[in-house]
Length: 170
Image 1 (cartoon, rainbow, N blue to C red):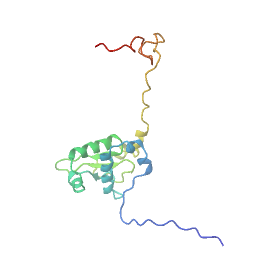
Image 2 (image 1 turned 90 degrees about the horizontal axis):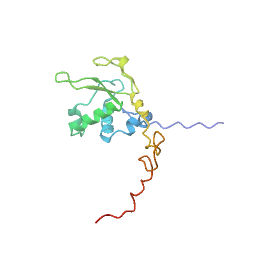
Image 3 (image 1 turned 45 degrees about the horizontal axis):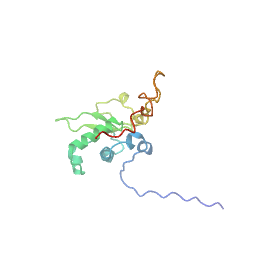
Image 4 (image 1 turned 180 degrees about the vertical axis):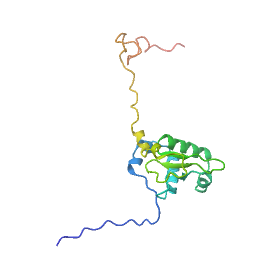
């Protein structure tokens, strides 16, 4: 008789939870983000219910109740998340309108009602564009660009003669 395979243990999580895919966390956009930006992203994910991406808010009152003290740090972290493609603003807030709304870019927006963005302008996965960063500049060439010059030129890895070995003048 064949042995029964053991079932994997069921995780004992009940209620809502926030998840960030490993592909997002392993991408350059997330890995190279500052700690305040990552912390703010976790605060934003805390609000996600599975159906409200695009309607997430970063109001100072709510963030203050969660331990945030500086509006400046919040704004810089929010701007960094937007620049890295992890976050997109979906509605501009205002005095009589309420707080601005945001969406995380690895999830789809299911409800565009009340947002200032349309489905054709939203591109899930914007965070992945940071993975194609330009290649860093190479060191300067050791040969002159036109092939002319001496080894004492500025393209040489060696200093020109007469610059080394001389003692300091008192």
